[in-house]
Length: 97
Length: 165
View 1 (tube, rainbow over the protein chains, first blue to last red):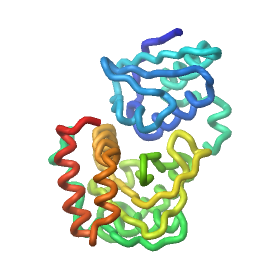
View 2 (view 1 turned 45 degrees about the vertical axis):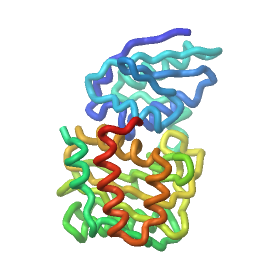
View 3 (view 1 turned 90 degrees about the vertical axis):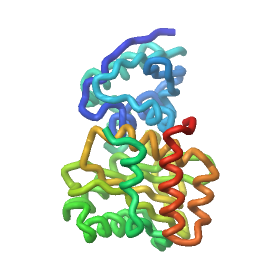
């Protein structure tokens, strides 16, 4: 299992469009992926859980990945968040964006 | 920051449609968005922005029992914050947010227009917490008219401040 701590810097936090992109990206991977905000956590592949985490701009989150493709999953999600949701996995982009 | 009391003020009796009889997602969104424009809550750009957004970022949410859609778009298209709730006698299909390959039959649509972008996280958390309570959804689906739906929504959102998510 690996993890990374990231500050969500974009104007929208992890709501709405960013949450959608985050979940679509997480679902590309077989690994279990969890996002933590303080003591709260959510399955990164479940949109309702991610929205309920209510991650506002400036919040520090920890993304945890556990499974056969954990390294790629973590890097992909880290890139998505740190690029302010501008650098999007090609498979997600081609799904209708 | 908007709180539960402020969110209850976003519901209005004239923004509850208890029998939206439509045959497609696009028709539902167009009718609802035009309603908000006609009441002065949104700019004339709002309907097209809602439709464009839905195609790229679908708004269906996979709740247990009934599925919901929460269409919305950018604050630039909004004059005054409001939530428009529509109940459909016949569900229409929405793609799921976060999993567009999943198609959901939606019977209740909560279209929201927010003027304050920073309020979206709290509003989404509140709406999802309310709609996760199956008895709340059942009550809304079975309510006799829009006035009863309005009362249920106001009560449920007020209670949400102390209910577990």
